[in-house]
Image 1 (cartoon, rainbow, N blue to C red):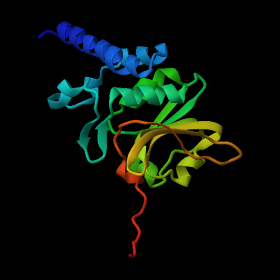
Image 2 (image 1 turned 180 degrees about the vertical axis):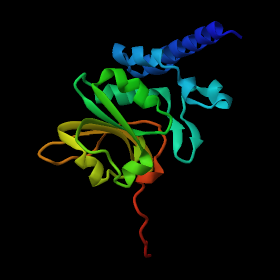
Image 3 (image 1 turned 30 degrees about the vertical axis):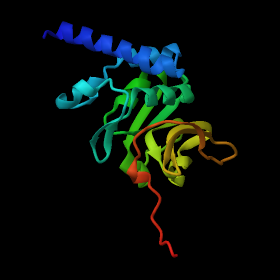
Length: 200
């Protein structure tokens, strides 16, 4: 198969992904569809898993690396509504797909690993937009402190063992994540709440 044929085939797969997974679920904003049509998901997968690039489920690559479903990224960007002036911080799923999607939509994007974010190893400065590539059980105060006043965060959230898309805005120094809708996505174990003792 030639490179031209491969490119044509994967572009057709991306078009089918948009028509059957995104548009049918309410993701119709052209800036999202254009980015997801442009960026080949298979480029972020090992060769042996490239054939799974356009399935409607998350693809686990290791304990801390994943490529979430197309719908997750579409809904995440829809909720985030990135602005050209945004300074964005991405808590990465390990593949750089989300960072690549959002890069042309904002003025600056910085990506860090979920392990570093959970441990408070964060870059200096404030961000107007934080995106988390997966679901977390709790939002660390150190991560909330990175968000500028009036800034937004969009993430997955684990509530009662169900993953939900969630968002929040920092107002008067306070920030909380509020569920938007139930949505399947990978859980980032680095953000799990500490397990406590249970007495019966």
